[in-house]
Image 1: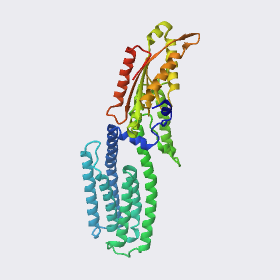
Image 2: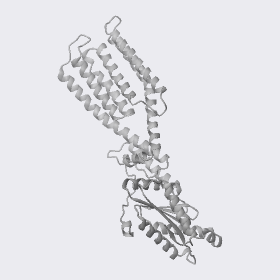
Image 3: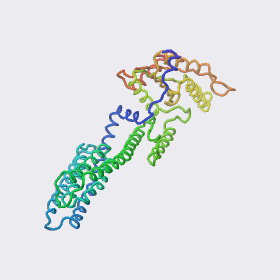
Length: 424
């Protein structure tokens, strides 16, 4: 690859949306597995604390049914009690199954089973213990179930809860023979009420589902930052209609940027440090694997730097390091990563760069350093660098750590071969 071709290579940094955040997780299977376990644990805890709401709800429903509906000796009392008892057994067995399950693991059918039981017991109460004129009130209680389902378990369970609630209402009103005497509701009002309920549920699912999706994105983002991935971006910060969660996401991104500035940058030279280098190299390596392109690593070491410190003093040595970093950053592209590993050791990562382009780049750096007057203008210092180059295609069966090691080996050969040279 020529120098011109290298300059025209794609100059875009990764991590611009949730899609790239998720791609980062998928390419780091251990992190993705940890996130799935964390989500399962959160759902387990939701099921366990919600059981007390279910117990309280069924007891209150029984009390209301006995006070305003079924009475002792009434034919509706027995089926109402039977429905309540069956529901409590289901909740107890489900909670027992959750507590006995392994941490980080939740059977995918359990949330759906509980939602189904919630809706059926609600329909049973209204069917056995109330007249036709109040059956529509089950939709109000069903709406609460839809909200809980979407918020804790996702959009699809919310859709399921909404459809099952509407279906139960229509069946109780129009299809199933009435249990309690009274005139049946007309078809048109029932259908209209069900449609209004569907419209309200659609808005609830849209709003709460969006909130849940953005919360999941924020959770992924925070976990990536915990793992040292400081290049991820949050798409929720660009919401058309911002809310408090959007503002929170923006605060998290700002905090991440400040955090990256503090821990990802070498304070002397302004280059990225070792940890940030490893994160950038992993990101560039994932992109290279996806595109089938190359990644080059250039290892650079100042020749005889110790003698500069010994003869000119450490302040001059620090100035030389800063000026060397300026040369490297001035030679690199925006998409390249210039890092200081410590002392006088530097590494530059060149994404989308072939062998010829990497060697040309390294030679350009070597010549610029050789021709540069380091230190103070009144007492310039001459310095040279030894450079090692390693390169691999993203589809090659190696790791970023191996690529760094290969660049270091090439650097060692450049230094033992006489210094002030490029070895590839």
